[in-house]
Image (cartoon, rainbow, N blue to C red):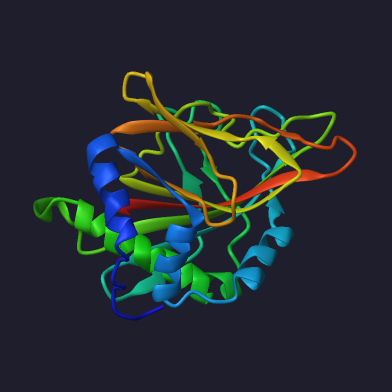
Length: 247
């Protein structure tokens, strides 16, 4: 995935100012959609449909069977997005008290989604924004970027937990959480807390392309459990998570 860095719309600099001031920003779908369209996004339907073919997360220390996912890692610079060989996802227990401390091997993101124009647009828009927000003396030549496709399911018998580890940091520099789809879901409120754990914000990703941007060095984030609006029907919440970390 090569190409020049996209120009940001007038709305995303507002998100950048919020990130600098508060450590997080809630970006409404119509704002992000304009930015992604400018960066060449296409075939949202095909992109979103790939969440129907995720692999079961086998590493849930709470015994839950409600989470499915795929994973990929990339090197990202101003003009290049290069996929790395498939590798495990690792978080220390300092950042993930529930599932951290082990190398977790997830099903890889498919080649079609790794090369998808919407994936490309999301990665490049985030790279442009996060690089501009990083002080010049700390900007890396390239970022280590991890991409996670998550589906959290819920039923009348069992809630779904988007962040079973609770309020947390990911141990990276920047985070994007992008809603792909909510089906028959109640709750799933995104919570933001400062480094001491005091609540500083909350909002709900409700429409496809609603997004949370997080300065992971400054704030913690979490999401409340989801439940089905109609207990007789399946319920799920699909999100894309990108994390950017200095190489």
